[in-house]
Amino acid sequence: MKIYTKTGDCGKTSLVGGKRVEKYCERLECYGTVDELNAHIGVVHDMCETEDVRTILLRVQNDLFSIGGLLACENAAQFQLPCVDYTHIELLEQTIDRYNEALPQLKSFILPSGNVVASHCHVARTVCRRAERAVVKLAEHETIDTHIAIYLNRLSDFLFVLARKIMNDSGLQEITWKKP
Image (cartoon, rainbow, N blue to C red):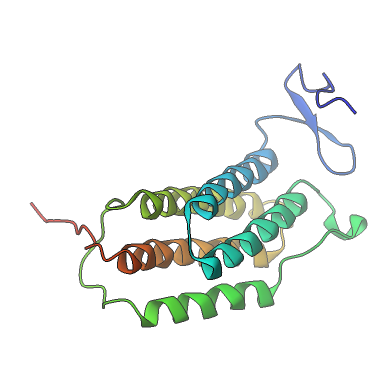
């Protein structure tokens, strides 16, 4: 099978189900940003040496792949695509709580730096926030599973806490914002 189809050469692509849309449409922006997020999380996964974290990141990557499929489809119920539901969100919340218990209390804003892996978590977090904004915007005029925006919101929190955990586990001091 060839990887290139040449069907997108004129600025259009197909959604799941075959509908042709412009490559700049909101739906494509949503699942393209989720795909970008997934790639950033892959970098964090590959750089992280903690097996527990790597396992969760792989789960997140699979969830994001499912979310991308749902966003690439105008009528997801018609195609029996894997969904993301409250159990996926709950796993993120439980992991956030578990990681957060071992962290020092947050007393200041943290700058996204200090360790390469932690910094990549912050990059992924900001891409996650962009994906969430795009999904919320799309949901204003199209039917989107509400679990998707909630999942992305919780995932950005997870990535923030993960960055803090990585700094803490490495014995590094978080770099805080200094008010001028």
